[in-house]
Every structure is written in structure tokens, then in C-alpha cells.
Image (cartoon, rainbow, N blue to C red; front, top):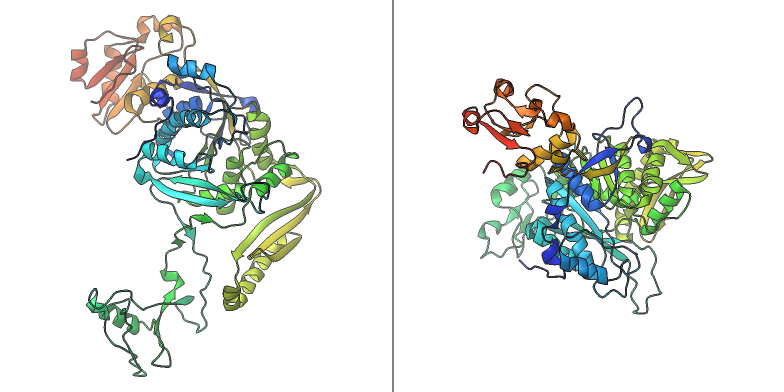
Length: 596
């Protein structure tokens, strides 16, 4: 497999492992909980903090559980003003960054190396968070697209890179480029096992003969194999009713004689009235898969300016450069089968991913949950504020537009199905028109679009929802148990030791009990005896003793191996081994690799 070498790679190769764990701290004042509820880490999350450290903070709760990830990292155009300042410990790395310019600009000849150094550890953590059936989408342009695909292949494996969507992001040509080229597109790199595909629209299907099996279209039955390659597909075909003989096409038929006889019996053959015609198959819409393969070209009328217009409508200004349109994220969300997915965006920016998630839930009744990570100071005043307005509504005076239908039109397909399209538009007007002042229909640039328009004079209605705003706490330095400074809370330490011992995340810490049980995997039960109190940690109360061992054994109905974290023990490991208990002393043994 090809690999990409870049300056600093050897120093960032395993940097994600040395990033400290931090506790997620709830900021109730900036949160928007559901009515009657308190902010909770089980809700949608908006996290303010360095995205590398925030991704590490999510591992104890979300490792292997995130279904859908969308990231829109800096494109590294040289005009964005992003900085590379990861705290990589290597002296050589520090010296390099000290001598180089920050923020990164077009004059920086090492900007591609810095960008790759920035992306490498983040992609490694995203891999740990992604569910085995999850999908990762990365928005990018020509500046880094090829280099990105190489490092993604190296981290996730070649087989995980499904391809790229080509998104026509610019509606009108840019004639400012002296090369004579208008760069009208961006890419979305796709990583995972399989995308869902597009919903079959039913276009091209009708039922002119009132067939009880429903709408159908005619399908080709001529084969593609020579007689030498597939002799069983080469035979003469006869209409059993009219006795018209259609012979055999040069490349044979699509089906063998037994399958063809079955189609004839089921009256699924369309017989021409002349022997020179070719019989065709009746293909029923209900017999076809609901999904079709998605085109690698996102040919929908979704443009960057739509994102800017949406942001301005909600926030009342244009104080964010090139926000992604929610329609793009909604389209990508549709490529994952799970309408209850956990959605992550670690370069949250203007909050478009949260907006799109809320919209998608409203459209299909799903219960998707979003996690946004934003490192800039506007995480509350811009990112979270936009989400608040989407949820609660926002001041707006003007015309609000909602696209209800669109389809590419050519003269050929319009002449064939104009009546059906008119009926579809009429149906949309009847079923959805009441929610709008007018329903506008137009054909522009070869696309038929139906748009609902409503006049709003005061407030655009909110879509509902909630979120918890978080910041990153101090690093969980387990050695602090020796000094008593910066002691982590019980729940944070419980999730931390569970993850470090098992490599799995803990959804919920068990209620406090005498046996210190916090959670279990298929192989282990994890126990923790701890209070964030120096005096308690130095007392006999903090030790594993015979009474606690008896409680652990009594509660272990499954016979799994128990792993116990405590600062001390009053029993020998030989006695504990008889009870299938492994003792791990805090803080020294917390990083041991268990179960080997």
C-alpha cells in the first residue's frame, strides 16, 4: 500500500496516544436542555475546546459508537489563517514550529507538511470513535484532496476508502482565474464499508394497462454474451399466443430458457406486434430495491451560496466565511441507514451539522444525536447560538423558502413523462401547499424545482430540540492521586479506567454500591473504589479488603473475571486469583494491558 512521507510524520505518528484525557465539564448557563430537564452528557453536545483533546475526551464514552462523522477541515488554501500548534513533545518538532510562521499562509512552503501533521492524529482518534458500520465524510478541495486520500488509506485501510463525491459547490462560473479555469467543485471523501445509496424515486414508472401489480417500466432482455461464451442464452423465442417468432439476437437473451418461461407464465413479457421488434420485460417498481447506487456526482442544486444565505437568515449577518449548506449535510446523512445515529463534527464552525441533524429528524421522525466540537472563541456566540435559534426560532422578516421537489429535465424525458411530472407537482401543491403562501414552480438550468414560499414578519418557527454545552476540564493525570491536586470526579475516573482497561467506552456508570461495580464487557467486570478526597484515599477505607471481595464475588453471577482499581489491598493476589479477581493499584497500574 502506498504511504505518504511528510515532514514531522515520525513525531506525530503516535501523538494521539500521548494526548491527555480530559473530563467534559457541563456549562449549564450556555446549555439548552429540554423543558424540565437538566443539562446532561446523554443529550446533544456542543464542546468548546481543542478538537484533538476533545476527541480524546470522547473515547471513554463513545469509542466505536459514532455512526456518522462529517468534518470540514481547513482546505489549506493559504488564505484561511489557521494555525498548527499541537503540543507534540519532540524537541525537533518544537524547534521546527518555533522557527516557522503561524498562522499558515501561501508563503509558507511547509504548509502542506503542517496540514498533514495536524490531520494525522485527529484521523486516528476519529477511527477509534467510528462504529464498525459507520461512515466518515471529509469535505476537501484540490489543495489537499490527493494527499488526504493517501493518509486516510494508510490509517483506515485501502478497502475503507469508498471513493469521493464531487460536489458542484459554485452555481456560476468564476472568471477571475487567470488560468482560464473556473473551479466550480469540491470533494467529499467517503470512508466506511458501504453507503446507503439514493432512494428510488419511481420516475419512469407508470401503469397504463392498470396492472394489479402496480407501476412498471419496460426493461431490455437482449443479452451481452456470444454463443461461445453462454450457449444457454442463445435460443429462439416464440410468443405462445400470437405464434410470432422473434428469433435470437446476435448476443443472445438476458435470461436462460427456464427463467424466460417463468416470465412468460407470469405475463411479464411485452410482445411486439411485428417479428422485427424485440420483446421487453415488465419491471415492477415494487419488485425493485428501494435504494439505487448514489452517483459520485452530487448533481443537486446545492451551492455554497445556499449555506451563506441560510446563515444570514438565521444570524442576521454574514460573519462566517463559506458555511456549508445544511442540504449538503442532510444528503450525506441520508447515506447512513440509521435514523437514530450519533453524528459527530469535530470542525463544527458555524454549526451546520447540528442544523442539518435537527432538520433530518424533523423530516423523517428520526432521533439522531449530534456532537459538535469547536475550538474557536465563537463556540458559544456563533456555533451554539445558531443551534439555539434553529431550535427556538429566530427573528426574521422576509420570505422563507423551502425546496419541496427537484428533478433534472431534458427534452427527451420531459416529452416522455410530462404528464406524470405535472401530476407529481399537483400532488405536492395539494398535500404541502397549505403550509405556504405560494408554491413556486420553475425550470432553470435544466432543473425543475418546486419551492414553497411563506412571508414571515416577526419570527421564523423553531424546529425543537436541546443540547448541552461543555468545556474541557483539566487533564486526568492519575498521578494526582499522590498529590491530591486536581483530583478527577468519580464518574470521570470510572470511565477513564474502564476505557484504559478494556479499550471500550462505558455508556453509563453503574449506581454506587458496596462492591464498587462500574460496568462490564463480554469478558470483564470493572470495579473502582475511589472518592476525590485526599484524606479518604490515605485511609483504610480506600483499600480492597475481605468484605469488599465478598461483595464482588456475590454480585458476579456471570462468572466473568473481575478487575478492581483501588489505591491499596489488604489481601494477597493469590487469594484474589482464587476468586477470579485482578487487582490494579491506583495510580501505578492503571495503564496495564489486561486480558493478554
